[in-house]
Image (cartoon, rainbow, N blue to C red; front, side):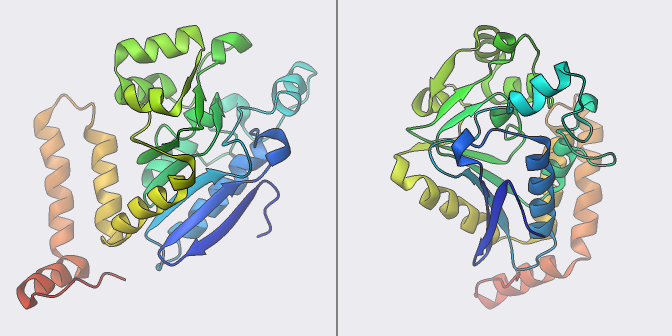
Length: 266
């Protein structure tokens, strides 16, 4: 499939998705969500891929929604794209951005420049966020006369805590990569030239592990992170454990340990 808003390439065990509207600092459109969803599913269907890195072309990561093609279009009475009014991340009916991200192979955001509005909220449910020192993060919804979306009022609190999440969303101010790391919005901050190497280092480490167990673990984190019923949390884990015991990846891990050799999962 040819993409008009992203680039897709593979590097050994890692798929790289690059947001590719550099003249607009990779501003988001519904078409970008469709392209990204297709590319993520493409990587999910490739047995040689263990993890996915997402970054931006040029100076920006994603400078939020393209105002002319989204907000202005809607105010003029024109639907800017698939399902934007339903809060599914601009994806067509039957698809949901958060559901896709949480069921996908592990996703690492490599934030190379400004990430504003949906440029932040679309990566909050990712597994790891790596920020360049040149990155800028902003939850600027109040400044646009709207409220946050993509369950970011949940995910931001989960990442940062109540106070910092409230401050960022209520002020709409920008923070740089180092402050984002200090606030725990970003999991790592590195010099700009080290951004992709760090993201690939994490992605390759993850890719050494078996796909079914990676995705089961993601499902458990999604379901159990805010679960108050510990019996239910444990029951979910036990159900997946029983499934693991029957899978070849578990048998390979045990054999490799006993044979004193690296496990071969791909």
